[in-house]
Image (cartoon, rainbow, N blue to C red):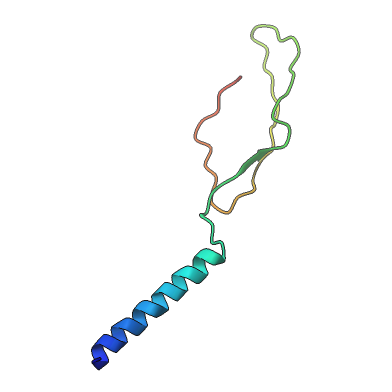
Length: 74
């Protein structure tokens, strides 16, 4: 076997071992995970034209940025 072929074979083996160890270590894809502290709020009866307000606490429990692109009333 030539030196060049041995070198390529060794590189392939190292690459296969590295990929196997990475998969075994359980590397996970980075994803955002949204958590809303109290996801609902009862405003009771509201008259027309009245301004109402409530703050919802939102947390990102994941390992990637969380983007909230739109919010709609339920």
